[in-house]
Length: 248
Ligand SMILES: NC(=O)c1ccc[n+]([C@@H]2O[C@H](COP(=O)([O-])OP(=O)(O)OC[C@H]3O[C@@H](n4cnc5c(N)ncnc54)[C@H](O)[C@@H]3O)[C@@H](O)[C@H]2O)c1
Image (cartoon, rainbow, N blue to C red; front, side, top):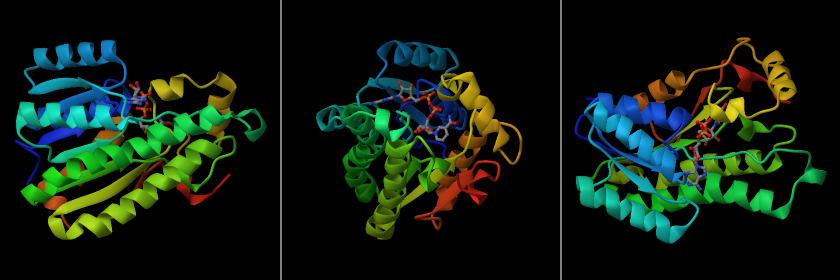
């Protein structure tokens, strides 16, 4: 049981819930690959983790680009021999009313959140099948159910749920599970970047009346990544304080 000696690749893990998840995995004995598009943040995260004695490498890559993803997976395999756990965490939200959104807002949101998860999963799944073991964990959002001003983001995250379900069916017999976490409001830099009036409005809709923490997400990723979690496949786990119980 556990994840000791597993190799985990976590996208967008130089910040927020990805970074917390990477730290938790390393503390539990996994080797971790810190990916992000932001080279400076990758460098500082890797330095910080090395000082803590973790087995870690950094891989700067834009996960929406196929060649960059292949190179990143190659780097991981060269450093640690394989990838056992992939957490498709990197994401962004280009929000706004439909009349104000541009074609490039749509493309960026879909390319990073959805295409990036597909490309990373595609690049690692062959290694996982060979090893007869793999855990693919996609970070979607409660917003896949729909959110006003979130047409590209909701579409991308709904696609992430579809991707998870399709991979679960295609890869399940090979010992590779695919699951999805749908976070609600979590206190990360993404949340801090929202205008204050939006943050106040969103909190009024929160059944718990408070934000979740990056630890709430790391806990759930750890549960799904565990060697013993092999019979959980194709599921969406909400970590949203009950916000998924109503729409709008
Ligand atoms: N914070 C929330 O309330 C919340 C709620 C629901 C879902 N989510 C999802 O959780 C995930 C993590 O969000 P977070 O709040 O920790 O955000 P964050 O902004 O703290 O971290 C996201 C990281 O992804 C990186 N990234 C962006 N584009 C990239 C690319 N093309 N290639 C590689 N890395 C890239 C960013 O540089 C950043 O470091 C995202 O998928 C987000 O959509 C967040």
